[in-house]
Length: 613
Image (cartoon, rainbow, N blue to C red; front, side, top):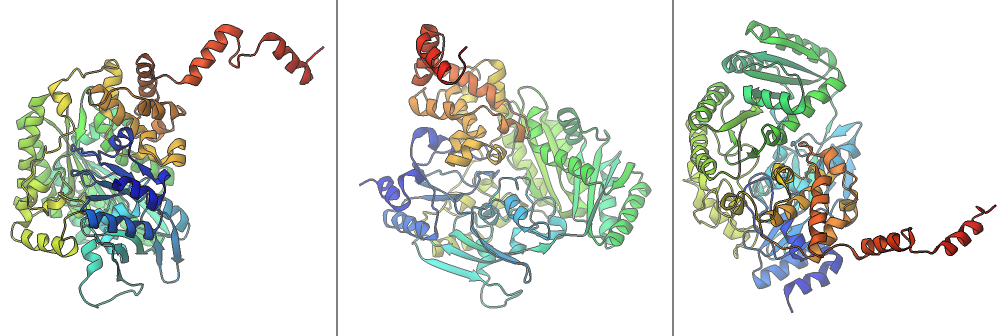
C-alpha cells in the first residue's frame, strides 16, 4: 500500500491532497526556489501528527511542516518531495488567562485572529507584516518579529512553552506557565526559530500583554541618511523606547508614492517613529522626538495620535514590499539576501553602501526596514525574464552579506535561513555549524524533518538551487501566452498569501489552488509549459466565484479575476469547459432560456405562481 493511502486512513481522505494541481500550489513561498511535495496532509489533532510522524519515521519519508507559506527564504519548500504537513486546521484557543497574562493555542491560528480574540484588553505583540495570514506555528518556526520588535521583542520573547512531536512520533513538552524558570537547558528557545527541522509544534503557551493606553507616531524626512540615523541614536540615548522605528530610503519613498499614492515627502530618507504607553508620557516623548528631528534639520516633521492617519501610514509601510512589483512594468521584487541586520549606529553607512552597490551594478534596490533594531531589507527589483539581471543579483547578494558582516551584523534578522540563505551561513556560523548539525542529528537522526534547510545536511548550496524562474529565463515569451498584459500580471504576484484572508472558496476547502496565489501559480505553470491543460486545473479555476476579494486584499492589487477569465478561456479552447455551462448554452440556443424549458412549461409555471391574467 502506498503511504498516501495510509495517510488518508489516518486523517481522512478529505484532508489529503495529492493531485498535481494541488501539489503545484504548495511548491512555492515568496522566495525564488520551488519543489513539489508528493502529498499535502492536513492534521486536525495532535494524535494525527503523531501517527503521521510514526509512518514517516518507519519509511524515512521527508516531512515539511507549513503554516500560511508566507515565508521569504524557501523555508517551506519540499526539496525532497514527501509530505507537506499543513497545520492550518489546528486553530483552537485552548486557554486564555489574562490574570497571569498567557494563552495556550494550537499552531494553525492566525496571528491577527488571535489578537482579535484577545482584544480589547490584551494582545500578542510580535507583528510580522504578514500577520493577517501568518500562523502562530509559522511565527514560532522562524522567530518572526516585525515593526514592534524594537520595543516588544521577537516571537522567542513571548513563547513560554511548547508541545512538540518529534520525528519518531514521540511527544515532548518544554517550558511552563511560570513567569520565569531556570530548570535545565532552554529547549523552548532552541525550538523557536528552528524552522521545523527539529520537531512539529502542536501546542504553544504564549505570553500576552495589556494593550497600551495610548499610541502616537511621528514622521520626519531628511536630506541625508546620516541625519536620520543620528536622530534614532539620540532617541535611544534619551531613554525613549519607541514601539516602532522605521526607515525608508529614497527609492522606497518613490515606490510608495508612485504605486500607493501616499504623498510622502520626497527626500533621501524618511523616519516613522511610534511610541505607546501612558498618555502623558507618550506626549512628552513625542515632543522630544520632534524637537530632536528638527535639530537635525528634519523636514516636514510632525506627530499625530489620529488612529485613521496612523492606520494609513502603516498600511503604506506594510504595502511597500508588494508595491515594489508595481513600480515599473516588467519588474518584480526578488528577495535574495535582503534581511540582514547591523548595529543601529551602522544603519546610515550601510544604506549608503547599498545605494552605491545598486548604482555600480545598475540594479534597482529599495532599502527600508526596522531601523530601531538594526534590521534592513535591501530588496531587488528586476525583470525576471533577463538572464543578465539574475547574474548581477547573484554577485550583489554576496556583496550585501559581506557588507553586513563587515558591520558586525547578521545574515538574517527576522526571515530565517530556509533554503535561500544556506550559501551565506559560512559567513556567520562557520565555527559552530558542526554543533548545529550535531543537534539536528540528536532530534532527527534520519534527517526527515524539513530536509536541506539551514545547511543542516552539510551540503553546499547555490542561491539559485531549485530555481523557480528557469523556464521564464530560457523562454521569456512563455510557452503559452495569455497576452502581454496578463502575462505581466501573473509575474507581479510574489506569493505572499494575503489573498487567503478573504477568499470564500478557500475558507470552505483549505485548498491553496482556490486562492489567488494558487491560481497564479497554476497560470504560471501553464505559461511556462510545465503543465498542460487538464480536468483538475479546470475544476479549480471554475470553482472561483470571481468575487475579487483576493484583489481587494492583495497589496499589489493583482487582477486575479482577469487572470482567471483568460485561463478559463484557454481551458475551454483546450476542451476542458464545464459540462453544465455547455448545457446552459445549448438550452439558450434551443429554448431561449437557460433551463431548457419550452414555452408551454414556462407559461404553466407562470400561472401557478399567480402571474396569469
